[in-house]
Image 1: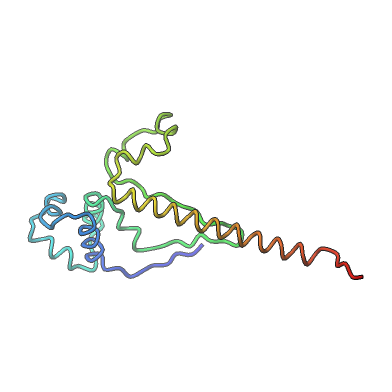
Image 2 (image 1 turned 135 degrees about the horizontal axis):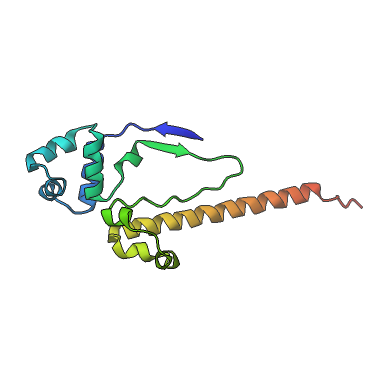
Length: 155
């Protein structure tokens, strides 16, 4: 397992997320409780205090900390895994898991924004495509091994 640290301009990432959500700068300022004049400074900064970034992550419902590092969990025998995004809303983090929640695999979609639903669907479709490719690859390897190991019928 290796960790790759990626250089990131956090202000640009925040601005991209803000625009994707269709939120103007004054609304972002209101959500994080700062004067509107501070927003331009935040968006131009390439780094940021973690406490402020956590507050912005909650306001924009996106974990910006995930952008800084990616963990390569691949091993020879492993398959890709999907790790769903961690909800940042207060309700989601304080809500206890119930049997009703567990019995409805789509219950989390009820409180998810349309953009997040679309992204989740796209990620699941990509995961399915990758799994299908892995199965095809595995089947080709099995066929090759069977062909190599089967006794040759020489007449």
